[in-house]
Length: 163
Image 1 (tube, one colour):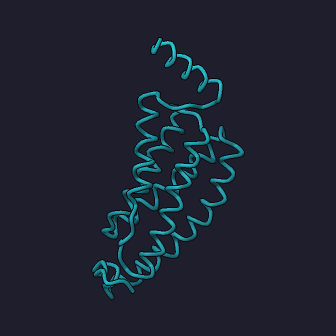
Image 2 (cartoon, rainbow, N blue to C red; image 1 turned 120 degrees about the vertical axis):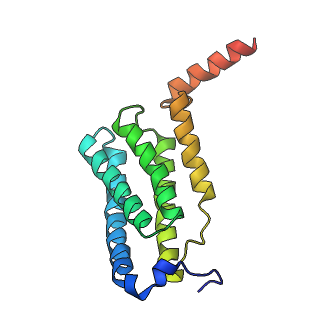
């Protein structure tokens, strides 16, 4: 166990059953998400799958927030925002976006393990949060690349401006 003080809710005997249920259910959701995210890479236009993935992240965010956690709902919210942009068709899934969602997913899994073992959120989510926020900003500003030909067009446009 770490030297960090446990979150009072996570060690409250009256909350034990709720916390245990949260851990079990969240692990089940993450197990399913692991499969669903792989499927999303194969079927990026499957709106039903995308909605299912979004709801999974939304559920984790909501239940972790209910327990008074801070980092888990925050990082989950960042993933949820990106998934919502996909759902609204503001962006098509591209490699960098998928990598960011997987980074968020992996961070959520590691953070959940920390919560389960040490009963606290003493886990650095900053790298993942910055990546996810950057992806969101890039989408909102149109500063992202979907295909190599788009990248080439952007490079050409930049080079023309320099001339």
